[in-house]
Length: 192
Image 1: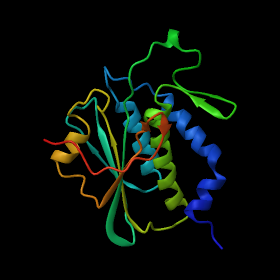
Image 2: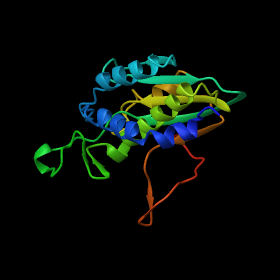
Image 3: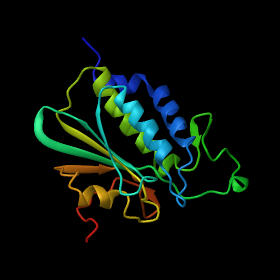
Image 4: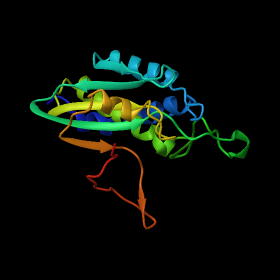
């Protein structure tokens, strides 16, 4: 029996770690907020798989990407994540702020907020493509800029231009409630 996406992911965790470290190595501190190098890297990775990727930019230094993987059903699941990270002072770090693996841990600015999630989204898309499996629904992945400063160049641009019309959305942003990490279900959103 051919390998499916779940088995692909389970047997290629080392590739996910490498992908996370590759993303961490690109400094996307905001401010100043330039995510061009990151967007180019992610777009090239997706394009090499034959995935449709569209670049949408209100600010040329802060591009967004929308990648689409057609599915079986007439429904859409959106994954959303941001390229930018908060700034860092390298001298204040005891580990490499642009990515380091020590034993079974990954360190670096943005490892959890949110380049680890971006790597997981890329890995999931790769799993469907590499196993020649059509997802059960259309998968749309929105990689946005300008989140850390609440700027308009990222998600607001995609919303204003009508790029994000989904039945459900998963945002890979980490969250913590009452001191425990958890999955949060919410229906609220930004209001205009």
